[in-house]
Picture 1 (cartoon, rainbow, N blue to C red):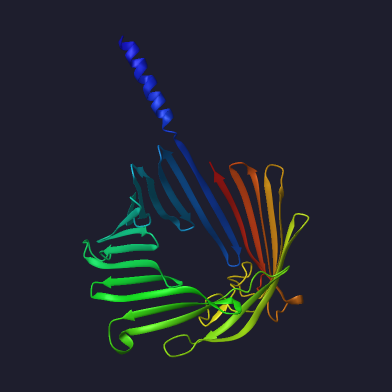
Picture 2: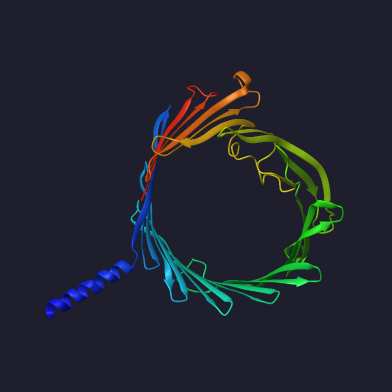
Length: 380
């Protein structure tokens, strides 16, 4: 009888473990970069391991560099009844010190959502509580902040209330903010105000009331233009639009339309070609000009023109990807103003393993060989 009971318990436990649907997954992404002059070696390696069971996941995130153990995070996420819970614990391995602990919770009840975030840093805490709901055409949201992570308490820090509602023919968004010193401001904003016979231009308006006299307070009205030039055929044109004013008693003036560049992207027999010429500013460098962002293959570089060919084919074991990009400088010293050549490749050797390699040659430097990187990604 005892043996039968033991066997029954073992069977129940076995079925229970099987029903947990446990999984152990993760990835190991590593890149080694070699710079020949002066000789240096850079390492960036991230190991992520996730254990999932019964709707909960436990994750460890480890980052290693050439300097050693750079960061260590532990994350827990899951549901408990109607609540969604999450927690992240961060450490600084170099000093064996605690960095930050965040705990989040959420609840949806009768059409109203509640979210809370607790943050603990050394000698500091804060608690943020958010609630949002909809009643007909009116949207209401409240954001209450207690503490400022400057001390271990929950002193009142601030509350932000947002309400979205229709008024006449417009959809109005409003925001009211209170701080420890009292009422801070109230803002009413509308977007997408159309201009007759100019469908590619719209205006956003923001009206703000702030207590105080002179420049410290009062009322401000800001008009901001938005431009949609539509899709271009075959070639991409990078177009900008000047504007000035739009604040206080200064009227909004729309200026010249400027073309900052031209690009072409196409695929020929499985090979992708990208060619871009761009002589405009980076996005955000001029608040009074609306323009397209600097193209991706040029963004973050000092160059104004680039050509790239790339392909993804089936290799011996898995997908093989390759691209090579030629960058051009303005008034460069090399033939045709060629300044830099970058090449990258990756091949999936197995389902769980991908090898990658890249090389950069800066023709404006001596020696020209700039860097060689080797990397691999392991997933399970």
